[in-house]
Image 1 (tube, rainbow, N blue to C red):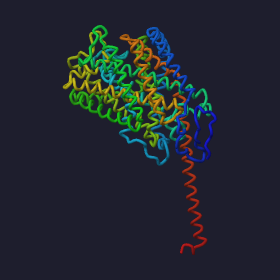
Image 2 (cartoon, rainbow, N blue to C red):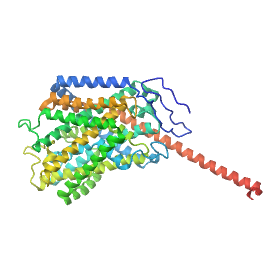
Image 3 (spheres, rainbow, N blue to C red):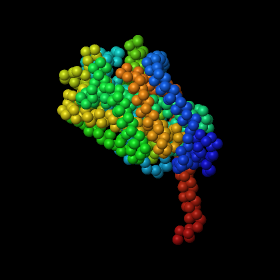
Image 4 (cartoon, rainbow, N blue to C red):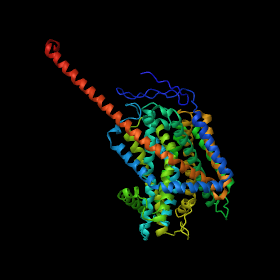
Length: 574
């Protein structure tokens, strides 16, 4: 089979895909040794980022208000659509896990995985939501406990169960199913069809050669912009938690009016975290990113074990077991919950929490999905889906049961103090306030700060790596200078918006809102990716079945011919 020459320099030479009579080719390298620049992706992405940041710097409060109004309208009206679409992705992922296509290997049929299981789990988990677990581990269950979903009973136990059920919904199977759809679609295109690492190639079965043109460019630009916005927002929110922790420990001064540390300290933290992320992304996946992910997961496991053993251990274990059952029992009703009969209160909760989370996970899905695809070569489809969907979900639910359960236990049976008199929860401080009630609280607060920093470093370096791969035309090992540029850009955007937004946080709020709005068009891309991937997997499975049948028939025919030959020429037996 000869290699197709692609006349469009934007996407490079395209290796041959599978034909009807032979399996997909082994991926060698979809690109030349030099990075293939993608100017139709790079420059529009850079221009959109510069324009947005410039407007946000000049008119931060107006931008925040305008985007907030747009999001209230769009997300409020499309809440039902997000709910049914994301739930559909869960069922699609479950079908992949148990269907006959699960044995297809993302690579050569006899190829071993590129990374060991522990390293693979650590990298996908750290990139996927490790930062969020630390940030929201205590705060979200407490928020739902203080202001439960509409329709929750007044009893304290009812509020606690509803709080944990809702938290499990937002951080459970649905979030990781979003990553499964994008990650598997890209992994199949890259490792089975020998395509460059880019979102556009997952849509090739639907759009054909048109993915080399403006359609593919738009998809890749959306992926880059959404990733940069998402990572920069998370970096800004993360340093606010680190700053709150330093203030809580008395290391940094806290402004009595705003209740936050100085903007200068936050900018310094961003510079330090960005420098660490840049160093990690320069060393690549095999060294820096894998090392940091493994180290961070070990540190997170130690902290989880400490809180479990130092806190109300048997209550937390009972809470975990009970909430797993409650989550499974109420899975369908939670998945399709839109609060249709709860009026404005229900609409506000849906758009402020569930729809917001679905949009947030979707905006992160290009980054996390492409990164997971990059590190999943050699896995079967079933391994991929099981590893991405089930294992991180169980670990995440255990984390929320321990940290969120500890916070709720303190409010229900302990000294309280995590929810103020007005029913508000300090999201930045909730983790450190909960640790105050445990032994060695200062030491564990320092560990928590380190954990937050390293989780943000792993997210930033992974995000920069993915953006650089897409902006370089799908090069799996893009040049170092561009890795440094994207990592620095993420930190620069976060720092600039923190400086101009000040204590109000209007700059970061606008950036966060924009991240969610990017998810609106991308959700349609994800639907097409699911259709495309399902179609390809079924078609390849049929080819493999027919190939096995042909080989079986041929072996039978050869055996019969040999027997007939022995009958006709018995002397040959001797």
